[in-house]
Image (tube, rainbow, N blue to C red; front, side, top):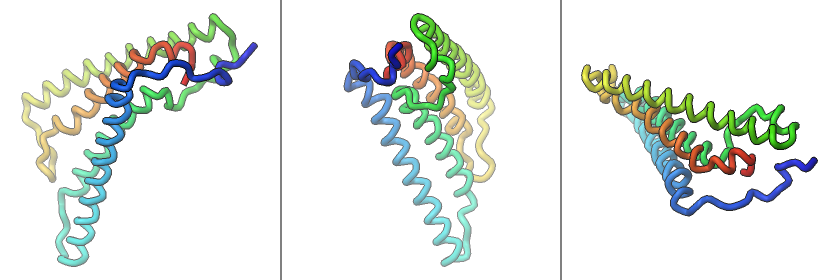
Length: 170
């Protein structure tokens, strides 16, 4: 029995998919991290040089981190680089390995779509209520939409790479 991990990765995904599901999330995540560093730096300077704290800084940085997590998860899902418990599927042969991997993809897609639908409903409630954050007055749609956008993109990424997921070829 040969291990699939020893085989070559196979066909690479199209360039547009790599740009949309890996390149753009990485660039956006990097920009958000830089924005967070800038806000933190400005807060430190303001606090220690001018004895005035940017009261909204912590809240905005938390929102930036939430966006970073969900954008980064898109690239991770597309590359199949997430942590997984493959103790069973790594030790079984075909066709069982394909079935286990297929069940994993199906479970991810179903759960991801369920979360996206629920997130859509919550966003509708937030929009209708007009909620804003406590200190920065950021519309709560902004941080909450990270979940919806992230989950939809993750599900799309997994479905576009379903062949690689089924054959465990990353």
